[in-house]
Image 1 (cartoon, rainbow, N blue to C red):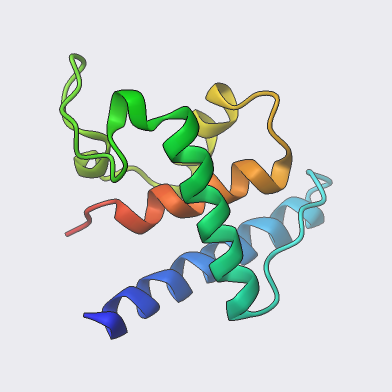
Image 2 (cartoon, rainbow, N blue to C red; image 1 turned 60 degrees about the horizontal axis):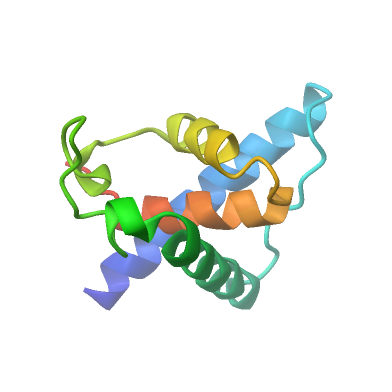
Length: 113
C-alpha cells in the first residue's frame, strides 16, 4: 500500500512539474515545483492543513462527504486542471504555493480507476 501511495504522489508530482514547465514556456505563472521528496511531503502537509481549515466543513478531511450537488469530492475523478481551477476559485487570496499544496492534497485522496 505504501508503495502505491508513493507511486501516486510521484505521478502527481511529475504532472505538476510538467504543468509548471508548460506554464513557463507559455508565459504563464512562474511557479516552482518541489525539488525533493521532503519538499513534496511538506507541500502535501500544507495542503492537508489548508484543506482541513477551509474545505473540510463541506467535504470532510478526505473528501468523502456526499454533497447536495452529487458525489463526494473524492469520487468525482477530476483531472489535475479541474482541481486546480476549483482550488483557485475557492482560495483566491491564497498564495500560488498554498493553492498548489491543496491541489496536491486533493489529488492524494481522489479515487481513480
